[in-house]
Picture 1: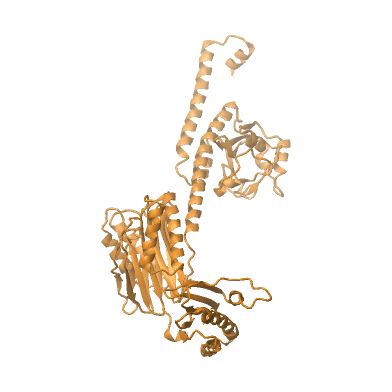
Picture 2: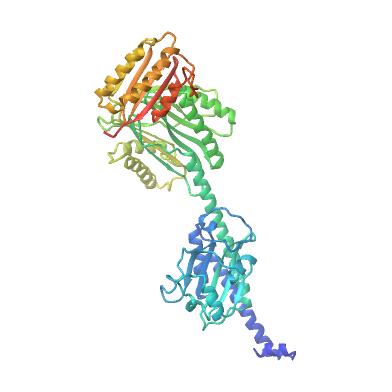
Length: 589
């Protein structure tokens, strides 16, 4: 201090005092550098945004400050992108952390973590966030304490801040302010000085980079998760004659987007298509390819292509999309009326069938085929008889295969775990996943690295007495007979309340069918399940379309009536012509 006064007065400084001052200055600089190095080693140990925030707050208390409050932009907390312009008085700032050495609970009610608020232009906080520079207040005066406290409705924070030294430092990266820290020292402690301002700025710069890395990771993870979720279908748990449960597990936290997928598609005749596929590789390119293949499978399934032909067309499409990706795919059509599976495989692991009669499980022996994208290879299909209560399990190889382990071990575990009794389909899926995880853990292979897609279907079937079929000659006189037969059948099924609507719609569809049929009989079928399905087939290949009929038009109203009365309706081509169908919702039995 004497050396400083001598320098200020222009007087010569004794050498012993000069050396002492230099030593003190050197010690102070070294202490601040050590502090910054210590803080740097304690923050950034994780890409988790919440953990990083806590690390930054705990790193400065109590060595550098007694109270540390951290505020971040609302979009940073949410892991979203935002306009990188200068904040204004409408910008919301979330209090994400508060660390202090005061008695426990003193700050909790007055300044709770999680609160979001804007800051007025007259505050030092607004000055810090708009200039991007630290703001030093040696002592918070009564007047400033009152001005700051006015932002907090029904809460008086003046006793917590008045008389304390304050340093507000910006948390920024790439010249963008992500947030700021409010640092307070107790009145009895030395006030913040210019060296502390420099130290606080450096501290905030390092913390800002760490937070920005965590923010970007959180943002990319949210994007990846949203993309993956948008590509995976929301499969209903119940379809015609079957119950379905699914699971999707990303391979690693750093690779949430992958090429595995599952799907189910409603087909004509109360049938359902099950699909499981795996585009080789990870990342956005694989996910994009997966999205294209999944859409193509849905489209071709809607055309009711046979399984082998569908895979053939899918392979041709993959060739046109490029030769950079290969994919495996297992496609299965379940007919609950015929109690039959129709399957085709393109390089995928075979499905497991669990027999309800004895609980025995087996890997279905299918022609393996080559992966989609190889090109120029044949695909074969097989038919497998099933019984009500049998369960079909389809999955990707990420569930049963890990590097360095024989896939036979995983397949054996899959068969064994799939046969375990379970209270529900969801429980059955979880049992399989846990069993495979335990198997590979015991083998010392560590955690799963690949994506997993799992689809399980319990094949309940549709009872023969819930199906009614008739053949009609292509003549208009058959329309009244069709109505009468449908009416009688609905009364037999105790569905009297639906008779009027179904009679009307059947009359419209049969009228169109006999008008356009050529030589073969018109087929009429009713199927009672969770819904009432009606199908009318004829040998004309031209699909009908929904028309806007005018007041004087004699035709064009049939499908309009069906679209108004039915829950769903549709058309599809068959081997011999076309099918037009509709569904009505039935009350739960």
